[in-house]
Length: 291
Ligand code: URA
Image 1: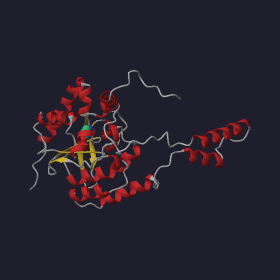
Image 2: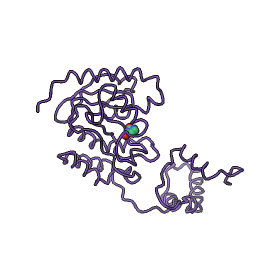
Image 3: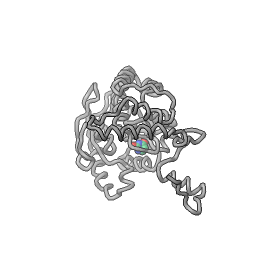
């Protein structure tokens, strides 16, 4: 297919703006890789002719060994990667998380963990921010660009709004704790895959257990559905108190809107305010902590 280049050709600035708009805001390698140029299309054509012949028979439409090999040859040569079954990776994450006796140890095992592919494209682990002694813990979905650069959760535009929401009920990062279900930024802020979420789940579960807050607030659908084990959408799940079992005790949990969603749909701020007032009331009703 001929390449269609607009006339006049876009400037570098226009191209960069286009990529940014499409979510491509970081380079993974120093040099670009033209993956199409590496492809040897001849074997692929042979394979398709062979499968056309096959399909004229009444034979079952299963790829032959030859066509699979031809297909494999047609693919660009990528560095060898050892595939590990997802269950094995999830089990490794569970074991690593369970073995961490403190938050610092948990940070250490997560930094050393190689089972989540997101780690290879992220700049760094985004572990948490705030006071680990806090009685309230907020959990979002995954770090974005700003968080990836700084290594701290919720510091971009959505984070600024979260700060304002917390301030409205007397909270800040000195008396609240903040983390995400996923601790590495998905490239281009894409939605984490279910497998990535399952791999990261044992870490955030252990994280919550170690912080041991009295109140857990899940921000947005992905965090709520993952941690509070519901299939309900945020419109239904928000503002409802549920029990959350940390593994060592049962605490109260509530879902509310993700601040990024509120930035896009400010009309829901009214409902978010209802949730915040419920959270403030629950915090005020907590018995004093034994020292
Ligand atoms: N959105 C999230 O869910 N978490 C962050 O840390 C930032 C944006």
